Image (tube, rainbow, N blue to C red; front, side):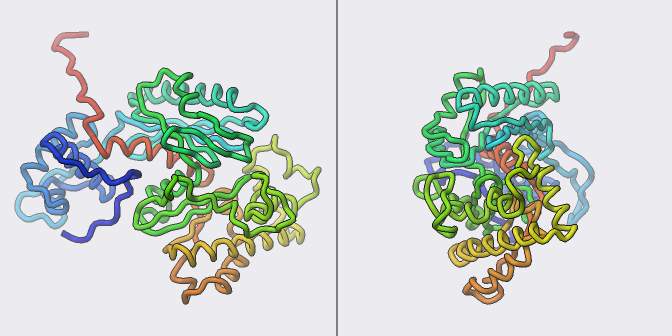
Length: 425
């Protein structure tokens, strides 16, 4: 059996004495993950590639099929010896996960089924700092209820919800300890949503950049790259680091706050109250401040962010020197911080998300020049810089993906449908 790529499971090692039921759940998950990561396979091929025997694989596939998590399709003739078998496909249209993101001026929700297909997507314009935590959670609960109803209408059962917040998140109890850009401190998001939702599924709260990094690893243009750094730029600047296929959370689960490293102008005050944070140099506010006067429409928070960024891009393409100078300044600053991260983590890819991806074509030249000047290893230590293709949906996609991980850990969480008695209506 060839070397398998690393599998991100979003959790610590699960090492405990295994009884027969536990072994079976583990093997069910192994087959399900294998189909997700490698595509349709015959039972014989699954057995060969996973090391399980053929009889066990047939039994596991039969149970996964009963739970409507897999289905059979065409004849698999690739590399077959003897009679070819039918391919087994990941199905799972009956189960879904919800991702929700809270940011400065919006809340968004997205629902994915087990195959990664979008069942529901909605984005609400909200002034979250002005609303405050309680009214924001009211709005989020309504958004979740809409997502659950839309999923049920598609015949899908919600298996979990993950909420992404830009800030320091204590994921063990779902408390946002500090989110300076939305003005939250010690907000019990998990308890607040439990109080508002009659949910029969687990709810988790995570940092938005970490979830975005997970989404890039799972379904982005650089999916399954075992070592990558993700940087996102919106009002704040965040980062997520994947090392050997696993998210680097840190001792207290608070890693990724790269926007608050001391790489900016020491005279500028950050939203967190400190001076000289990196996001004062490369955050969206820094770009817009350099590119346009205060009364310019690109500063208007009532306008959709993507429309404002499209206007910045239009001006750059038209050769507006002030806009181009602002983009060069951000690109250089972005390269300064990215060089530190490359020297520290030696990733294969640095992915730019958020507004960095939208305007990436204007940022890339000064960014790469800065990397060449500052990264110690030859050829920028073997790192490439790429633009995210997930846009502003990365965090909600990562949240939905995380919610669905429980099914891959234990497929028996999805019940076998009850049979309708013959003649019943």
